[in-house]
Image 1: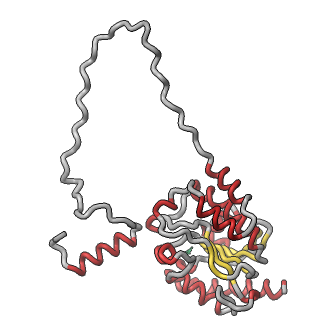
Image 2: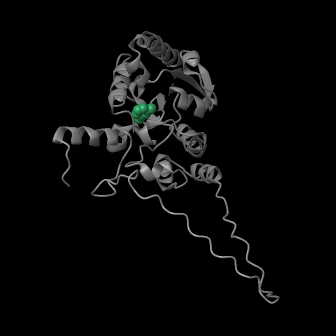
Image 3: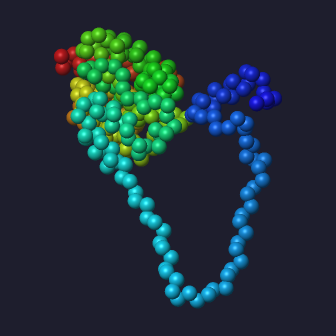
Length: 269
Ligand code: URA
């Protein structure tokens, strides 16, 4: 389609739409909906004279659509997963969460399932949605650097030095918005089963969303750096690497938190 835009502006506009979460082009030409004729309200049918119809059957009441309890279904599916492969299959098969429809990939985990540390983030962003792996964008690169600084990483050959990484949500929320309480309630049973199956020594909760999912409360700037207990594991809330990219001064506190994690692992060794 020809347009008055030059190539560079058109490319920038397209990238902006992708950044906002657009995943499909639904037409070849844009529709200016403001210029469309407003649809006229349908003319009312003239009232018909009522005829006595003593034998006519009573109108059927509108069908009651049964509400599906997706949280209960999620709990059932998660409990039925006997191992990590079973859990991955159960998450991929779960259709209760609308976010799945807009996502390119179901992003489940990366790293070593035998790791001592399980890191839980919020949800995939654009890069993770494309690659199908958690924490591969800019925030993920910082996360890798942070753990490398205490000698740990997702690709470490020794399981004692490795980390296992997942997110509360396996699907990218549009425009990277926070997941809604309903969306989280459906996915938390899978996350809890994930923690049971991986059985790490400790959890690292990156930001408010995993604090809410695992500990039932948020307030990351107050909670960070203090050990808590989540699903029977010591849990360390930390500020999310995306926050650290925006607030580099907070990296100093994050470093203290990493040293605290290292010290706990040494004490437990
Ligand atoms: N932020 C997250 O919380 N998780 C990811 O996988 C990427 C960015």
